[in-house]
Length: 546
Ligand code: 16G
Ligand code: MG
Image: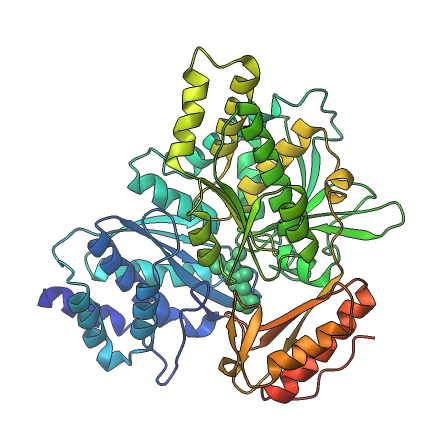
């Protein structure tokens, strides 16, 4: 044991912590400028090794900063079933990250004692990284952390975040979920996609065409790798493939969603279906421009609606009565919630922002479709639903319609990456649904009309002064802020607004929606002013948008 710790100290000296630097394991792990992350990476290698010993399973470590600018980086841990690491261990991550060099061993031993970790247990860690220039050396630091504690590594190199989650789940289910290789991932998803698409009659080449903005990131590389598995069933024109543009710069899912405009670098032809991935390919949004050149965005809410409608119809056809819900956050457009509840009659749940919260709630249902408006989401299906579907397929008593629906459901399950939201998997599912339903992007968009909305951010001295409740839809503090928001919302029709401290950036986020864009913009601005005045705004006062 002491020999092991001697190794840790020796290697830790090569990854010194800048004294005094304090970082938090946030909504999606550590994320900041890549220059100050080397020690964090080494230490997350140590922590993943401990987590692996504790769970007696393979743990994942992904080096990425998703949609952040190229100069940032980040890291997050993946638990055995491919889910986000459990909250207690997020706390350990923060402790370990912030221990000064001389206190590192103590912090490590503290976790070992608290969790009663058997240090002679084997450890296995899967490591992946995105295409950032800093990712190669930072992932080396993770690998060093793992091996200095005697853990065994598998370095997957360049993979999307959801691919790494998938590998971890495959490994720990001993192949039941699939083969733990990138090739195995393409095969499973593409075979299911091709089976689904066979149910689309008369699909023209035009309908098979999709323009994709790869955000100049890992998603673009991986789509290129996958293309040969798709045959001619999906024809992708890939833009922002990383060959010359800058990662996430004026492109990618986050840019398109927040700016509500097309990415640069993608040629958008009227009526044509387009989509954008984010920098680590765990988000996707769709869009098109109409004949008048007006831009239309189909975000996570539209995607959740399309997918849940499709699944609900199949369940009805298959005669399966299961408990299904759509899980959203406060950012879900009010029109989508209303449509899902009132027209589709499905249960809608609202959770705090952040994938782990949605994932957790979705798991409580037989089928949980979860999506953040920003385009991160997936479908979770319980084992019992999978079994019922298999029984229908196997039963000699099922009629043709039931069998067809059951087969479609089964292939839907196989195209989905249930471990986490996955832009590649979501894209394949959406493309299959549109083809099967013979639906154009315009028809999909017309299912309901989004309420105009606006997101803004406000700089404050300390964003922790804002405390929220009711899935972040109401502010408990500072005093008077919620009353001010309530009074402002009353001035507009169909209006809603909320504020929350960001979990990834040092700002307060403001969301507003209303019947017109002018009203949504005005409301967002007025609420920003209230935040600035009541929550300790810094810098210039927020200015009106118009
Ligand atoms: C992270 C979250 C995402 C969330 C976003 C909110 C994961 C994997 N990602 O990107 O789900 O929507 O943070 O950011 O959990 P914010 O707190 O800065 O608004
Ligand atoms: Mg991402």
